[in-house]
Image (cartoon, rainbow, N blue to C red):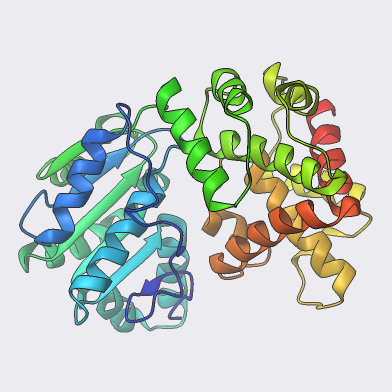
Length: 352
């Protein structure tokens, strides 16, 4: 299989168009990683090869990988860039073995100029996959082709990662992204409010930034909830309103640990559909909206990447998940029924 979840940058369809260097908010917590990411695509394969970026979920690693891809596409239009999550790389590798098309798979990831591979920690314990990636790495690096890797931890902290791979990851530059400080969180909120054309009082932005400290995904999710409520009810945004709406986030409420399958089952029950329906191909409008809502909730409540959510929902393309999240965010501002359904669903799952 060619696997549509990875992207040939001849068209940027597989990349999130919002994830560019221009939309990345610089701060003390990410400035070194950003500087390295900016340097790499200026001279692909010559500076920091590989570039290894690590940090917790929701801090901007994927954003930087996509930004590098967009930069190369815009400045070196004949270069082939491939972005792929490690999970998709694994699934394509398994499919290639099953269908006896490993030669095509090797060409897909070796006859390129830039490889951007996300969430490399998922290689731990998978010896066959590590063997394949080892040879892919050697092929690209030996030809001075650029490799950029992201992970939720540094190479030495990934158990059962082969020593020879660990060593190669250290050939270039290893840099981390830390949780954003208050100033950066505030800048991120201002940036999103401006991008969404949502006028939010400065004191409300400061309130949200001071109380939600974990990651950018949760921070932006809080702002969406507040602006959607104000838009639906035709009321001005205030700090008092934000405090009332974000109670479950501000108290750092406990979310019970669940497997992804367990969470999907709970969502399906609450929405009144079977898991098979949510994973299926039906285009009936109510079911499509329920499926998109479920994808949005996974993005909101878990650390799963877009490709991981796509796999959970029947192996769809990860751009389908990006579209679903964007659409539900928009509908929450336009339709009270959707806003109520989504916020009720999130709060019920947090209390369960």
